[in-house]
Image (cartoon, rainbow, N blue to C red; front, top):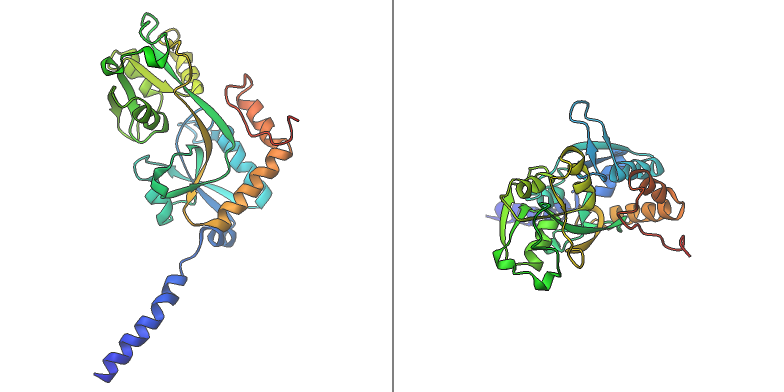
Length: 273
């Protein structure tokens, strides 16, 4: 009995030590000199050549600039699932979501870096459809079907802002541009996406859809990288580097490269003053 009690005491005392052995995201990145990035495809932030695997875009160039400043390498681990990426971040499947992550509450299960862009979400319809050429409040949304993508930011915003509407929702790993195809084929009345997503769609499907003349964007999102919750050293490292890239003008140069018409606003700090 005494031996059993001693074993239980030793086990109880040791549990905190075992808990402390879990390596933080910051320590893992510093130890391996690499950051594992989950990603999803959303031009002009994250673009991927499916034949070669080559990636480019605002988020890709920005995370590479961060890596250069920190003297680490970037590993593009996998394309994320919108439904599971908060849990995947917390479990250490990858260190960050290095894409255009909208800063949604997400029940406090993930954290975000400081924003590196601010993006409007607009509605797109068939050219002959004039139903949405008016103010949001003048539309009977109970008669509208909105295209969506499960877990995606614009869809989340539409569900929040227009809960009375019907939704035609694609599964999580569908391409975001497929939301526009739902409207083009008549399965939905309107798609809410970033203007860059529509521009990319319009290149291969010219004249199929147009921007609805609504009185304002559906939503304007702050865009950041997604990181695990309660990893303050990791967050501080990325935030400080993003601030440095902003004040040096490097972030502005990346935006200019991929967004020359200024569809998206960027953090400017004192640079515009």
